[in-house]
Length: 373
Image (cartoon, rainbow, N blue to C red):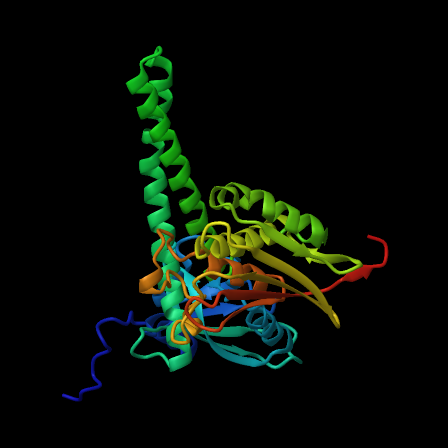
């Protein structure tokens, strides 16, 4: 008996006489990789069996971009949308949001029909990747996606556990009735709950930033107002250390386009880092300079500095020099750089070595610098 007498067990036999089209549908559904058929706007039209882990049950007419975790760099999304619009081919590594909201790194290959066709059909193949299969440049992206998914789950679990502790502190307030011991216990609980909540907020923010999901409310904002807000947020820590901040501004008011809350958060994180790694009463200097169509803001301290070995890792999530662990998680610098990148800028770190201080320089695109300040 010939080896081709029987169809493979995992393929459903098409009706007799149904022709090649039916066989094509069976093969499409049996393909081991996730394959999606989308229109030129990115809406899903068909999905094979292997794609169910990605699209879930209610996938019809859902956008492909609802399923993707695009990197923080907007160029990837722009290139992918252009390929859809123009009927081009595109290949790259992206994260995907599965039906269970798990983050999966995949190699995505988009093949669009020629632009001349009225009803353009695009085939998207998603092939799961692991670190061993990835190219060197892709391995970091896989790590970011999986780390982001872990942090999102951790934040959710910790928030759930924190709620009853917070409620218990509220109950203590109602029954302490002047009892000094209960009063002290309640204050400890409330103080530590607030501290944990701040850490969780940072974890959520950095997770969103790593996955390219941070939402921004963009509008023209004054850099002076942003820096004032950052200084106000850092005031308690700076006062506790007796540290003074000097601020050097240009003679013209600087206006940026961005999210004032996120920008203040970025500068507050950099100020907090400068304060944490500087001795008591040490000066911290902020300098603002206009350079062509950009503005640079430097935050310089005279603290412990960074070794040449650690400097390239300064913005890695959770990165800290072993000799300089100060109780922080190593989130602030990662978040600061991501916020700057979301605004079309960047943050660079400089240090002449241990005990020589550090300088962090933020570069942001400039909208306008007005003469009247």
